Image (cartoon, rainbow, N blue to C red):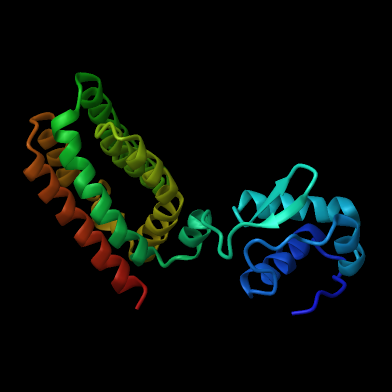
Length: 232
């Protein structure tokens, strides 16, 4: 597709998108040397600094690479680093399905790997969830609930799981806040899910991985069902 001048609104974002389209559409295949900054700036109708920022964004996305003295080359037709963007765009229910696969295994690992410090952190997080429930603020309650689950994953002592779950947290938080508000879950039970979370912490503390996994799966299954009901 031919390049063309851009409109004068977020120029860096527009330039990045236009250059990305050239790559993902196949106009500039992998191995292609991009036109120079001056040429791109003239074609897009922007300054060289805008082009430079756009190329940095594409490099950060893993699509292009600058080679000293040679120029900027296409190294991938699709960005290998679009995972956060994929999560932001994903339906909360889809994210929850993946969360179940990941977190149930994480809690099983946590039950076998947890330290005394991990158990103390879990019990503190459970207490924090109860305190937030008593406070009456739905957002604070959701944040405390998420913090407990983060502590569960941390007790598995797997940095890859930690990193993956950290990516999930913003989407999960948003979905849970919407769910609590939409269904009024705390209207009938202020500390919704307390028994299940207490049992989960006890199972991890007792090194009972199977029980911990079963409790968490049941809890997440219930939440996923509510999410689907709320969005259909």
